Length: 272
Length: 96
Image (tube, rainbow over all chains, first blue to last red; front, side, top):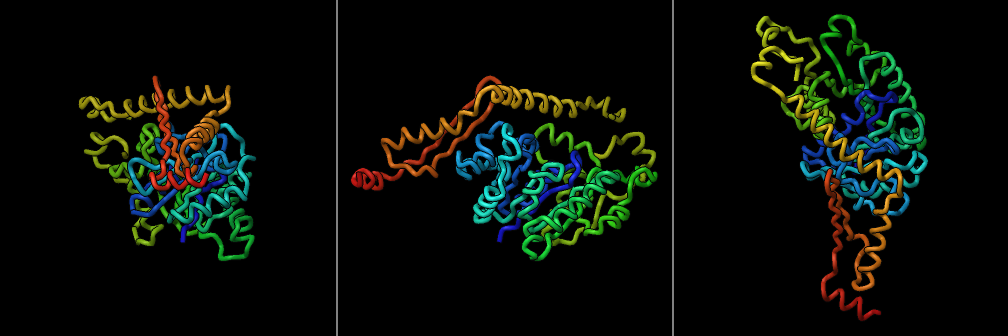
């Protein structure tokens, strides 16, 4: 049975699209048939982060309006063959998405895929509501920062009241906390919220911690999901999070400040 | 921030990913800006092409694939239409 997973946050700029791209690629690398849908109609960006922007022909709105078939709009990833991308429309507005249209797409995708990832736009309006409506599970992307934690709490409330599962009084959407842009050095200095604090406030299980890393910008520059950079801490942290998502036990890494010796101070740059 | 040893190694990696970013943006934005001033013709182009081909061969509209690769100087549009086997074609022709 296909699982629908929404990647959401409420707040913008916290790393939803980076996380969606990394997570989808990670699931596909593990042999799961995965499709990742960009719900940010009007401001699509997942195609750029996935590096498929030159190949977009049709998008989710074309499929909903009947101008293209679903399999024509899906872009098969050239690096991982179990991965597909359904882009958002760049020219239409959010009203082009309808609940019935999205329902039809998800129903059709569920026949062919194990995981359907929904990359939510920021905010709590139509696009974001539709992205989370059909979810079985939610990855809530949060930065260790006050407004991000508050918005995550808000979106958790929406998941618990306005998702299909909530409306139909089924088992609730399974929630996962993914903390991104985490900087252990600043946490140690007392400048950044601690992991325990975020967990205490949001009280949902911690799926992963992605350290602030230069490799994330490099990955978006080149259109390569950061999880493919197996050398980087961010890439490894995403791979761990995917493993945990699939039920493996993995200790959390990159959450303590590295003790820099004299040698590292002189010769080492910043974390990759 | 580079550590001083990177300077001696002549490490220039960051620059190359940034220039890749610039090039990708230039290509995608050039195409998007054109798209803003006129309607997206691809859905219609595809429908018309399929209609023309369907006049001669019985095709399954679900087996039409449109592949596009946008480039800086040139883009390629590949439309792949799966034609049925000769036997199926004869049957379709006979039915008419």
